[in-house]
Length: 86
Image (cartoon, rainbow, N blue to C red; front, side):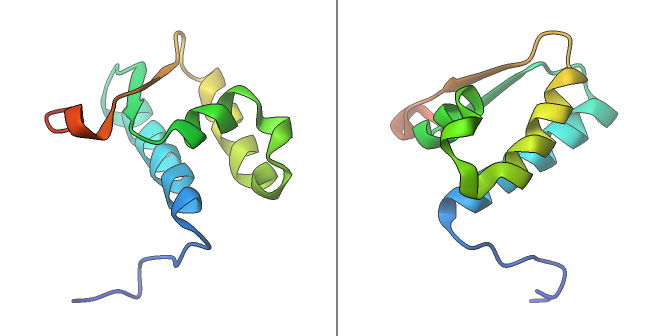
């Protein structure tokens, strides 16, 4: 499998942030979706209190910029056991 287009992330949490950024950018282009779901409670905490996560400052700044583009941005936690059909 071709892997050179994939960026290696520092941690699983970095991957979660990158996945949310990617989803937000795509929803802005292709959908009217305003609500995002994740089974990562830490990701939600990061978005709500970005100042508490200084090592993610650059990534979270991009997320905050994207949030401005959504009229009613919402992110909710879906327990992993229920995160099947979302």
